[in-house]
Amino acid sequence: MTNLLCKLFVKDHQNLEDPRVRARYGVFSGIVGILVNLLLFVGKLIVGLIFTSVAIMADAFNNLSDAGSSIVSMVSFRISAKPADRDHPFGHARIEYLASMIVSFLILLIGFELITESIDSIRNPSDSPIDIIAMVILGASILMKVWLFFFYRGVGKKIDSGVLKASAFDSLSDVISTSAVLVTTIIIHFTGFTILDGIVGLIVACLIIVGGIKILKENMNSILGEAPSEEIVDGIREVVREYPEALGIHDLIVHNYGPGHTIASLHIEVDGTQDLFALHDVIDNIERQMREQLQIECTVHMDPIAVNDPIVNELREKVTDLLPTIGEGISLHDFRVVTGPSHTNLIFDMAVPFEIKMTEKEASDKISALVKEKIGQEYYCVVTVDRK
Image (cartoon, rainbow, N blue to C red; front, top):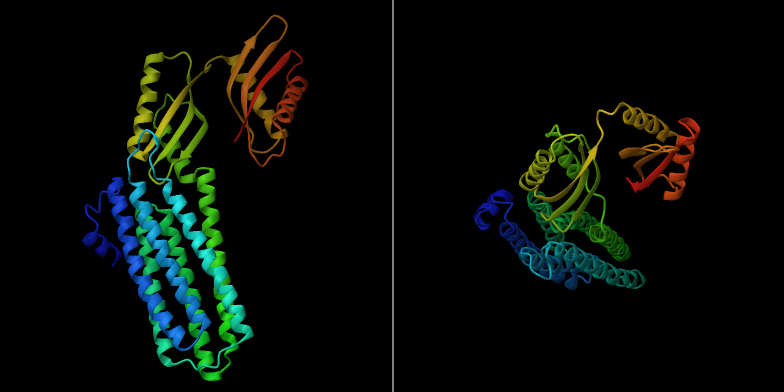
């Protein structure tokens, strides 16, 4: 049904690479969310007021916050589709992360308000009986939220939207919380144990807060900057492997400026004896393929290395064999040898994983001491330490 609705209401729905089409998906999803959640809010609020049920009213205001979240996400999609300008040369796509954070703050606000109301209900439980009509409305609400979960998840995956994925998670949380309210309503109807209403309202409020914190944490990482996904890294490596002139890849940095707006830089090792213009042409082709195939604006730095020098190769192997004694996962690149009359400099970069708790100086001193001990006193290491 999701695909059918997108075909009917999203113009040019198959052109997912177009930011304007992506924005249309987001706006349409926002409209659907607003309509569904407002309908649920009105229905539950009426029932909650009639039967003075804090659990049902808590669920109602949860739906109202979802409607507000849909408005925020809809506006964010419109803004994120704006093209780059002089003040924002990388576009406006990161507004989605800010919108998701606003959504999380709204969720947290509603959650804390409902905790207060639930505690008050536990202290002063209502004596009003809960009718079968309330159960029917809650059951219908669960079905609508299940559908909304699949709708958000489907569109979120289609356009790779963090906002819609967060909304899908929120809808699933609503299914759980509304189910708890429904079970509580049934128990109260048959037992008259009205204090349970406030207890379940408190549980629902806590679930709302947990969901809000999770969404907030995910989007804070996106704004602060986080490691690229394995999918992106593997895609970049696959493109580079298609070119036999590329002998190695290192110093990969990926910057995420929002969905569909990724910028990367990396170093590629090449045979230093090959024609410079031919190698430059290869680098241009790699950058172009990154842009066309992965939608990544990539800048490639070319590192010439000595490939057929037996002395350099032997020394590189000896130093590489020493790395595991310092820590697991350490690697080296950009290995060069400068020979002098009294000593020989081994110049290289050493990539150290963040998990290895040592300073750059400690890592450099350890490999330098090992080289002198295991390879020879005449060898001096000039090391640049990278965090892998």
